[in-house]
Image (cartoon, rainbow, N blue to C red):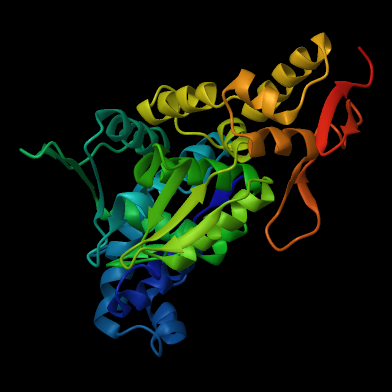
Length: 348
């Protein structure tokens, strides 16, 4: 896989006053072919003013876009493209490209600042023109326009001024690349929630379209998520244990980042809770048959919870069971005595 920057696309990142610079390579080509100035003037005078053509032909001036284009990297291999996914993800997160096309990124995490710096340096061999740490702990990076122009050529106007969006160029990238992008986005704007109310991986974004696109990419990975709006931001949540596992295995936070450590800890705490409870029920029924009330007392759980493990749970407003119970799976059988149900193992 390879990406390239064309001179025509590069010029489009400049104001319209520079459009004539598109013809500069043609002037050089005609001169190399041995055409005199008078002949070149005859061919191009309707497109280029005389004074400009004279200066270009005689090497007295070079258009700024052409100068800049000669300085930037134009071909990007797979390793570069991998790093660019991280860069784009961070720009959509805590970074941006302002109207003057200065690239900026900020974070309080030195870990993420270094990651961003290393990615830019690996691809473009350019260091930040400004790096400062504020009293609040925020670290800010600024990069020259050359980097911004290259990114805009490759991926369209995904960030310019206050606007951020998912461009066609980003959306048509392969899935593995999108995964690297959203990992960087989760590093910046994601969080791991482990409260008494619920446990989840969450992502906040002001743009509904960007967070909707993230949801779509997660769905392609068979990871379910939900969206809600709190009045200021859109919030994506991954709540289900299986989906949290898939997120860890297929996306995750950056290796070694504190959010990754927190997610691993959360998953260890809730690791397959339903299966563990079912195993405890089976172990108790190996000894003798019991009622759901007896099992609930022994396991310190509600009788309704035990009933769910035995007979399964149904989705709201649905006849279909979301989780089958031990009776449905034909591991446990039921013996009715009066109004009481006694449960025992089919095979001991």
